[in-house]
Amino acid sequence: MICCYCLRLALANDGAGLWKGVLKDDFDLASIDYSKCKTPLQILLMGSATKLAGPKTKTVFLEDLLPEEAAKVAPEPSGLINLGNTCYLNSVVQCLRAVPQLRSGLAGYTSRSAAAQGVGGGAARTQTNSVFLASFRELYNNMDRTADAVTPANFVMATKMAFPEFARTGPQGHPMQQDAEEFYSGLLTIAAAETAGAEAIKSGFKDGVEDRELLGAANLVDAVFGMKMEETLTCDETAAALEEVSDAMDVDSGAAATASAEPPVKSYDLHRKLVCNIQGGSDASSQVNVNHVAEGISLALSGKIEKRSEVLGRDAIWSRTQRIARLPPVIAVQFGRFYWKQTPDSQDHAGVKCKVMKPVAFSGTLDVYEFCTEEIQKVLKKARDKALAEEEDRIAKRLRGEKEGDGEAMGASEEGKDGEAKEEEKETASGEDKDDGDEALKAALTMSMEEPSPPVGPGLPTDFQGQYELFAVVTHKGRDADGGHYMGWVKAQRALGDKTVEKIADSDEDNDDWFVFDDDEVSPCKTEDVLKLKGGGDWHMSYLNFYRAKK
Image (cartoon, rainbow, N blue to C red; front, side):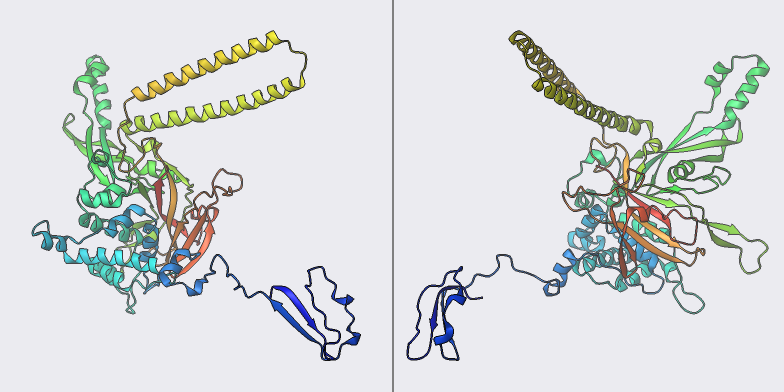
C-alpha cells in the first residue's frame, strides 16, 4: 500500500490537458475530463518516502520454536512410548510428574556414591539405585524438553536392573505385564533410600519446611508421601471374661475391670499409601458392602487379629484400629482390585490372581478427618470451626448489606423527615460502628493471644482442614490381573486468575480439564470423565488415586 500525499495526473499531447494538484481523500476522479487525453493514459503518483513501520508484536509460529520452547506452550504434555507391556510404568510416571515436591527433590538429587566419593565419607548406596533414580530424573527432563512422545529406554532398563522380577518374559519371549502398584511402591522405596537427610527434604519444598513440621520424616519421600500410623490393639475377650468372673464372685464388674483389664497396646508404623478394601476387610472376614472409597479406607484401617493375652494367659481375639498421626502433602490410595485365589484342585498352578470388578465411587475431594488420631483431629477441628465461622459471618454481612441497601432506597424515596430524627439516626449509627469496632478489636486481641496450632505434617498450612483434592489416577482395563492395560489420568494446571470453571451437572464439583495418557497418545478430558472410572464393567477402573492437600 502506498500512502500518497500528492498525485500528479499527466495528460499527453505536449502538455495539453496537464493537471496538477493535491488530490484529497474525498476528490471525485470522475469529475476529470478524460476526452482530451490520448491513450495510453499516464498517471504519476508521488508519495512519501517514509519507511513503513512493522508490527509492534512479532508473530512467532509454533513450527519456528525450539523443541524446549514448544514444549512449554504445547496444548498437551508429552507421552511415553510403550516398549513392550510398560504401560504400568508409563502411567505411574505421568501421575508422579504432577508432584512438584518430588520434581524439585529430583532436580537437586546427587547420588549417594558420588557424594561419598566427593566428601570422603557417608553411607554407601548401591550403584543400581543411583542409576535408577538418575535415569528417572533424566526421563522427566527429556519430557520437559519436547512436546513429542519420549522413549523411556534408559529408565526401563534401569527398572529391570533394580527390580529383576519386572524383567520376566512370557512363553513367547515377550515382556510380561507388571503391577503398577508394585512399581510405585518399589520406586518410592529406592527414592526414600537415596533422598535421606534434611538437605534432600528441604530441596523438595521450595516454600521451605521447618524441622518441627517433619514429625519424624527422615527422607524426602516420607515427607511428601509418608503417613505416621498409630495402631491400637484392644483385647475383646478380656472384658467379657472379667464380667463372667465378677458375676460368679459377686464383685463389682467395673472395679474388677479397672483392676485387671488388659491395657491397650499402641505402636507406630510408616505407610506410604492408604488401602481401600473393596470386600472382605483387612481380616478377610468382614461382610461390609463397600460403595465409596471412604468406606473402603475405614474398613482397611480396622480388623481382628489373634494375639496372646497376658491377663487371660492364652491367645485371644484383639481389635486392631489404625489412625493417621502425621499427614503428608500427597496421599496415594490403592483400590484392592487384585487378590490371590487358591486353586487346590488345579494341577497346573496353586492359585491365580483375580480382579474385583465391583464399582467403588470416589469424588474430587477426600476428607481424612475421621481417619486421624484425636490429637490431629483437634488441630483440624480448630481450623474447620474458624473457616465455618468466617463463612457464616460472610453470609450474614451479605444479608445485612442487602437489607441496608433496601432501607437506603426506601429512605431516599421518603420525604418529610425532620432534622431531629436524622440526628438521632446518626448518633445511633455511630454508636453501632463503635461497638462493631470494639468487637473487632477484641477478636483480634483474642486471636493474637491464642497459641499457634501444632503442625500436622510437612508443608501443610496452619489452617489445613484435612481435605485433599484428586489430581491423578492410574486405571486398569481388563479382567486379567496379569494382563490388561494401564493408563494415567492427570489434572491439568489451571491458568492463573482463571475462575470460570463449569460445574458438573447436579453437583458442586468443578469440571476441570484433565489429560488421559494412553502411553504415547495424549487426549484431553474432564473431571466428570474421571469420576466415571469407578469400575463395574470392562472399561478402565481406578487402581491408584493420588490426592494433594487443599490450600
